[in-house]
Image 1 (cartoon, one colour):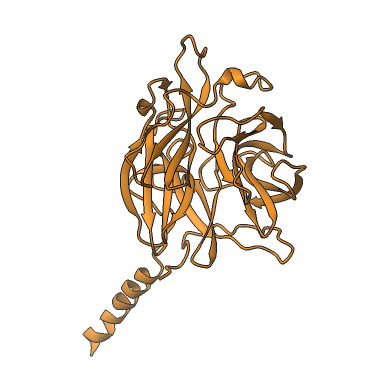
Image 2 (cartoon, rainbow, N blue to C red; image 1 turned 60 degrees about the vertical axis):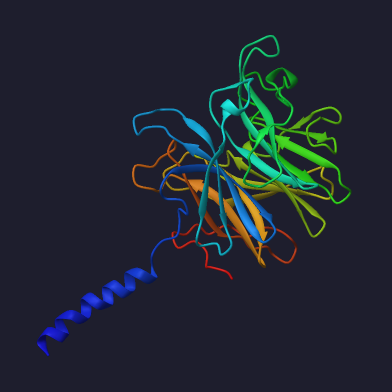
Length: 320
């Protein structure tokens, strides 16, 4: 009997540990950043950056872009590094934030990296687009040149303002791309998704820094972005009745994240629930240049405004 009593606390602790295992961060074997979710044929795909900086590094080192997928929000399959700056003959440098979107059976992966100094550009951040017939590749450079180069936007007087593309196709079929550091920029895209269709517009939402994410819900357009509400970054947002604005500031929805100066939104509805993806630096040896993607629930008020995101280590429940 005494032996049985001694065993009970051990069994209880073991059982308790199993049921409180933290899901967040959702990817634990590599450092990931800048989440961009996409749902296709019942599968949620997650396009991410990949931090490879050492603990001693004092700046970003982002080798490539990965794709993960899930059907239950718990188990994530790594499809590998499916794209890198070396995919683009004109590119150099790091694999900054990106987003993949499907149109007419093709998948367009809009990426931000840097342009080689040549007769086309004097260097600086640039946006390219890769294309595939599958959400998991193979992907190739869709146009053989950058879609956006630093010389196209001159409102910001530094070289890294053309980063973090987000792409949205409206109900009428018109596609738009938003991007930018320091100011938010947008432009129409032609139906082929690889050509600009008009002039670039720049504007500055309240506290805007970078990392825009644009979508539409129940007739309302949302512009969610990494912000300077405090330092480090937070997530704030605006809404509008038109994708071209005017945008009404709505407030902060995510506070600072653990152990990372930056955060980055990725928003999706999947199997009846809304999810908010972001990154922090919470893995062992993690930090601002060794980040990890997390996911938590996203909730809306009756008037369409977004409730404050509650950051958890538990993450979200599995779905069928």
